[in-house]
Image (tube, rainbow over all chains, first blue to last red; front, side, top):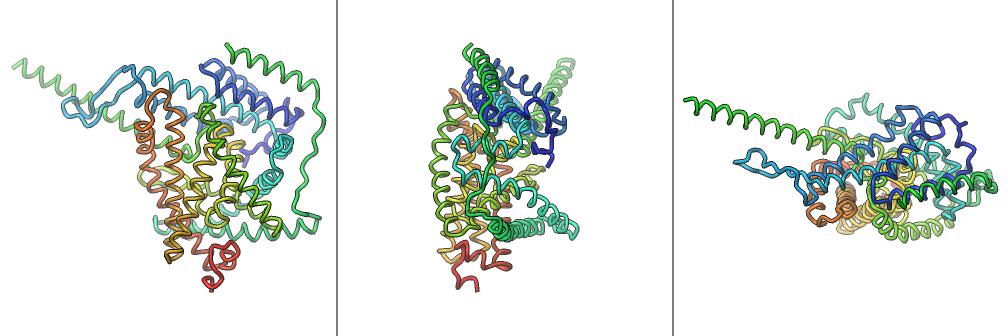
Length: 255
Length: 265
C-alpha cells in the first residue's frame, strides 16, 4: 500500500500548494499533451515531472512500479503500429520460409513514427497524473474535486471506497493465504472454487461493514451527507506562478 | 560437386536464418501477449487516446454516471446504509481487479474486471458508478487506466460490463437457469463485452489514417489467448460468489433483489 501517496514524505516543495491549483495545472498540461502533434511537449513534460518526482523523494521502486505498465503498453503500441499499420514499407518477410509462407511480417516507417508519437504521448500524460498523485494526498484531491462542482455523492463514495480498499486488501490476503495453506489453489478447479469463495466472502464482509459503518456514523450525527475539507482562499503567488508556467507550456504547445 | 556443396551450405544458412527469424518473431509475439497481459488489459492507459476520442467516450459515459448518481440519491434517501454499501462495492471491484489470476495459455497472470458481480448485485446503473469510482482511484494512484481515458474505461468496463452481466443474469434466471449457470454466463459475457469494447476503443483511438476494421480484428485476436480463458475464469468466480451468497446469506440476495423471497427459502 506504499503505492498510495499518504505513505510518502509529507513535507516537500509541493505539499503546501493548493490541491485545486495542482489539479487545474495538471488538467491543463494533460490536455496540451493529448492535443499536441509532435514529440517535444510530451518529452519536456516527462522530464519536468521526473525531476519533480525526484525532488519530492519518491522511492525508486514505487516509481518504477508506477511506470512499468504504461511503458509496456507504449512498447506494445509501437509494435502494433510498426507491424500492422502504415504505407511506407521498410521490410517484408514471408514466414516461416519464403517458399512456404504462412503469413508476411511487414515493418512500416510511418507506422513506427505514429507508434513512437503515441508512446511519447502516453509517457507524457502518465507523468502528469503520476506527479499529481505523488504530490497530493487523497483527501486533498477529494476536497479539490468538490470545488470543481463534482457531485458530492460521488466524492462521498470515493471516500468510502478509499477507506475500505485497505481493509478489503488485508481481508483478501488473509483469506487467500488461508486457502493457499489448505491447498485451495493446488489445481485449476480448486483454484476457481477458492477464488469464487474469496470474492463471495469479500461481498459478505462489504455488506456487514456497510451496516456497522452506517450505525457508527449515525451515532456521530450522520444524516446522509459527509463533511469535506473546507477551501481556503487561493494564494495569489501560486496562481501567478501557475499561470506563468502554463503560458510557457502553451508556447511550446503552439510551436 | 562444389556447386552442389555451396548450394547446400547456402540453403542451410537460409534455413537457419529463417529459424532464427521465426524464433525472434515467436519471442516478440510472446512478449506482446505478456505485455498486454501484465499491463492490465482491461484498462486503456493514460494518453493512448487522442483528445477527440477521449472527449467522445466521456460524452457517452457522463449520462450513464449521472443516471447512476440519480439512482444512488433516490436509494440512499430510503436507506442510509446504501451509500456506504456502494462505496464498499467500489472497494471490492478495486480489490478484485488488482487480483492476479493465472492464465494458462499465456503462461502468465491477468486480472478479472469484477463488473459482472457488481452489475448482478446492485444493478447496472449503480454498478457503472461503482466502476467509475474504482477506475478513478486506480488512475490517480496506481496508473491503471488514466484520467483522459476514464470515459473510455467507464464505457468498456462500467457500461458494457455491467449491462452484459446484469442482462445475462436476469435473462437466464427468467429462463429458469440455476444460480451457478446464470452467474457463470454473466461473468463470461461481462468480461468478453468489456474486452470487445476495449478493442473497439483502442482501434479507433490509435488507427490514425489506417482503416478501422483490420486493426480492430488484429487487436481482438491479440487479446484472444488471454481474454478467452480469463472470461471463463471470471465466469467461475462470479458463479462461485453468487452460490456462496445463496448458501451463507440468502437474505442479502433478497435485499438486493437478486432473488425473490420465496427462492431464498
